[in-house]
Image 1: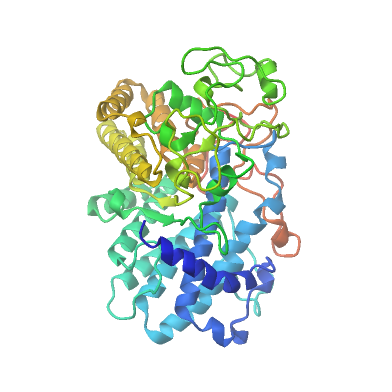
Image 2: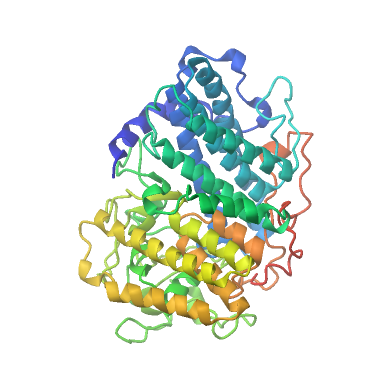
Length: 556
């Protein structure tokens, strides 16, 4: 829980600074360095704002990736309508108007002061942000960006060029982090000025880039493996890159954003995804009580933990009175899950009934909510961990799953199984540690060490016994589950591999092209004559050379 009180104070300090940079969102309106005020000539104030904007950018993109991969619930039946250009305005502004503009001015100050560590962190964060922008939009501005005088309407660069520049930027950041001299960062929210951890994060970002490009770059696998063999990557959870929240309710609100929408005086707002809950129910996943908190013990048209049948409820769960969609297979979850898990199916676009104190809430992991101890009591403001959760950005469990995927792609099934197992061990241990946030948690409901070891050994045995398609499906399912809280990596994996093929279908049988890349934001495409809007969301990013949608990925 270190740094939480510092975060609460600094949120207030930076609030006015950040607010002034959120009035407009167009690239051509970026701050002109020639008009900098004395207040902006504070390097550490810039670094504070940059880190907070980076967290905001990851939250927005991670949420979208989660919705598309059924880690979170997606509202709306067609992909094109769900993700209109206006929905991308905020995350584009987080990157270009806020972060990149601030980074340019902060770097100029840091160069003058000789603060190499500041520049190193800036380059690492900017490099990864550029990679994610390419992953989500394809071709994006770089060479003409943040130059409002010379290029008021910046053109896009090819995604492959931006990726190459991002990797080079990260390498430059690593060199600076390894260099001598300069002052420490006053407020390093992520690693508290442990630059060896920043270097591990930088290398793990590069691993993610090489994993994405393995389909289009014959050298990506060797470059990936070189980092793995160096050992200088996030292989242990003590090196996880994450943003930690506080419990302050207002002025400013420092709680996890998902907590804010789930633990309110009127109950839970957002729905949880039926697919991921059902997957974890069916496999007795030991993380389920940490991920989800149930407010009731019986979902309409299902059964309670004691086996009691629950009648349909037309008012609160409309689909409980409806027939299964004809394109859903009999074993695909639909509408009502067992044991009180109350969520929604992928693409369900019904209105919001009076179910705020019935539906399942996000749990103690990662949002600092409640641990589920079969108490089935309603949520409320301040319940559980009070919102002192995390935004996971790059975790050791995810990195091991990247190694598992690359190993499986190269035919090394033994290494794939080893890192598949490491993913499960590290993910479960990290998730279980969050119970300490909930002072009222009933620890008698925690899974035992035997439960955990049995689950892990069972999954590893299943993986080893499966054919190649089965291995890919199992790998992807566990990758998705461990990415609960940030679906960027899962969205990339889904487009990269097409797995898992067992995802719940969209409730709309004609849902259109899957989002292979997002439409450019309206605040950019509508005013920038050098950016042409895409014809549809089926446009593929440079590293995605798989078949076109809607045929790929399969489960849509």
